[in-house]
Every structure is written in C-alpha cells, then in structure tokens.
Length: 95
Image 1: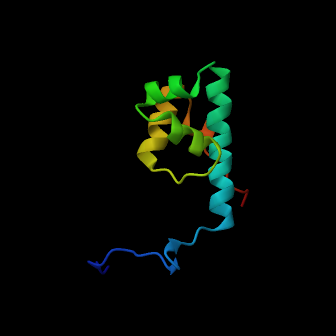
Image 2: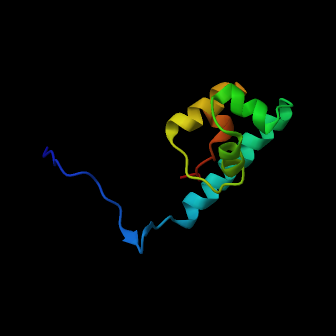
C-alpha cells in the first residue's frame, strides 16, 4: 500500500467547491430532523444553542439545510437533543 503525502483537494468550480444534489438533499433532511427533535423537546433555537455550545444563527442555518456541518457539530446537536445518530442522519438507499 502506498502512502501519499499530498492532501485530497476537491475539484472547484469558480471559487466554490461544487456540492452534489444528493449532499444538499441530505443536509436538508438532517436539518429537518434536528428541527423535529428540537420542537419535540420544546426547545427554542437559543435553548438548543445553549445546550450544544453553539450560536442560534448556526442552528437556524443547519435546520434550513443551508449550512455544511462538521461531524463535531453534528455530535454536539445529537448529544444536546439526546437522540441516536440514526434518528437524525438521512437513511441511505437500499442496496
């Protein structure tokens, strides 16, 4: 097995990394699920933000599917909402 020292660099279109339609759909689904569980727990945006150690504006963007998120951010939200990862991540297609 060969190890390459160069980092992976995604192809760029103009100044922006091109995001596939599938990724956009998954972000929207993730955000929709976060919002669903936030409302079930009767938490405001600011309440969830406080529990997750985030800004409420960032949660708004995530819930709308307008923001890419890091895994660490997803974990903060999952812990704050006390849900399982499978509850919020979109289900993949059946193979």
